[in-house]
Image (cartoon, rainbow, N blue to C red; front, side, top):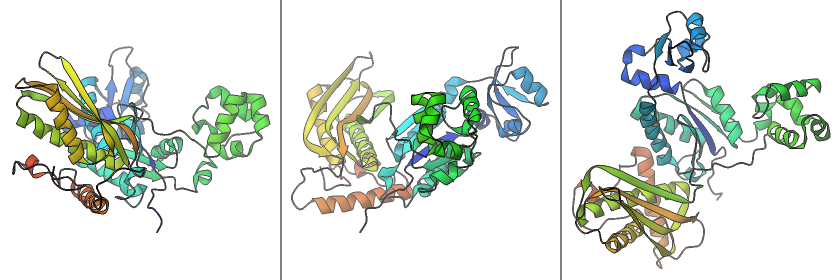
Length: 403
């Protein structure tokens, strides 16, 4: 039986008219109006435009004076970047609930590598629709998604999905998708390069893909020619690169009110171990080094770490490790402002691991069942009883037994 796979594993998620839509969350009177966010002064420019304003010819980076003339009745809202940052964090939190392989491009767009979801979703369409549904239901915001086999094709696809849609460049159709596009749609083609290509009779991506590399090099230089020729042929070998370089997966929380006491800290560690293990499994990764981060009310921060005998994605093992680290930290009754758990030394879960004899099949089956329930009903659909205010017994893990 063939291993399940997602044929178009790269998603580009782009929030539609993000600043405007956030303003509409807080002022429903703006819905349906031609709205822009930006400076209203004589030198003001448009930072974001609603699709109603765009239909009238208003564009981002347009001088506000021009935008007013272009669209009589335009509603101008001053920017609130702190508010946009707050909502952006919530959007990216949803992204990371699906996969830790998230590369942010700005506050309102990111690349996601979702190949690790192959056991939970049949294809890229199902993943993309699930992400869009989460954003819509939890944040009341529209998002457009492009899916493809490479980063730049996914980004191009999301442009065709706007507004509030989904476009997939299916595996094997890359050349057909690119064939008739204007060369200016390729990354790296500005006015100068487009002019040089036009002098060679090249106006479409398909023509560029079939052009002679020596001819392109003679007009564009070797580096630019090779780069554009590869893109024109649908070749983009870059990968999604999270800020951490996918070197670790972590969860941390700053508490609204400081917490203290071993029992309260252990409950929070259990919750965080569950979250980290969930993200590891969604990415198809395991890790060997567990680290604990504690910050006190005076902002003094300490970390403790230990390396396990073998890599794991089991929350029970992560929790046990965190408890050992907490004991080593000697916190005592001191209040804690921030608590965090991270796992480093990542490797594919398929890599050989030391497991308890006779337990591997049961652990894998339980993990898949619990993860599938979380995919269908939400990440908090299945949790240890201790996190639901139930018994104080040791936690039960999706990958096997009680701690």
